[in-house]
Image (cartoon, rainbow, N blue to C red; front, side, top):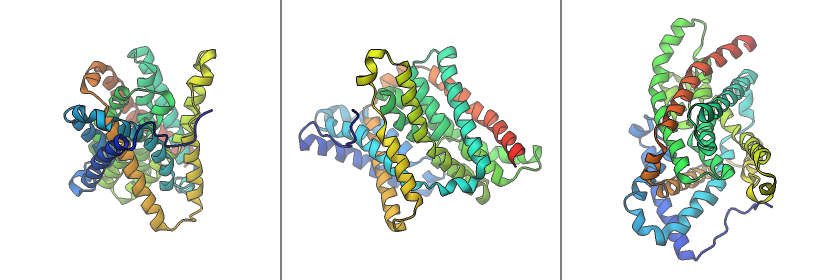
Length: 351
């Protein structure tokens, strides 16, 4: 039976404390940096910065600290990650669904499903990538970037190098999109005179990778586009939990008969994520407390990202080659072109 506990220390308190202190230090520094206007305007959020900083430390200083810090770093990468995903539910409410309407839900579902299906097909038939890599890149492109990749990792039991490769694709193409989407807006509005900033915002939120990137791109377009983009993106983030449940069922179907019992764990943290979102929709907690929980959640997720970076070696990234980047590039093109067609089609039929 899968465990419901988040913490199960298997070593002494000193190594745990040292590793947690290291990841917390990196997380706090990157959260501060991500809040600086010059950095925030680039769409580089705390999660992205945390893994970059973690990789820098991991490939320079960390080898000398690994023996003393590894237990705490592993705990942050695994247990704190699950707790962070659960607490992420306090950022969302089911009332947000009504704000984008049924058409927004349909757009997000079609974009998510088509993008992940294309990722699976491209990864297997065209680029010959292993299942974990194509699923991680597909999750990051189709749902919510690094957070989706991190949440998918424990479900499919992918190693850190593959996770780092997938996150790198999100960082590269999501950052490019921050500049491309605002530049496309005048062209799109001239070619499609009836389109509104609100509709273009929904397109932005339904196709761009990271929440921070959506905010940055939407802000550059205008306030109406920014609000619609964030709501559409949050709705897309809410689809993370059912997506993880789907992956679990898919793994159970494909697993050899003798390995299903011991080899696969039900992603309880995904179910708890839905429960927390439902609870948050009731607005029973004071706003100040919810804000504090969101700040704690950002710290936990940043610590998990820092831990992932600390345990990622650049040699493993080099071994991955260019195929994952090429696959992510094709997915990026699909999100702009195919996602645009999905948005236009749904808004035309249901508008």
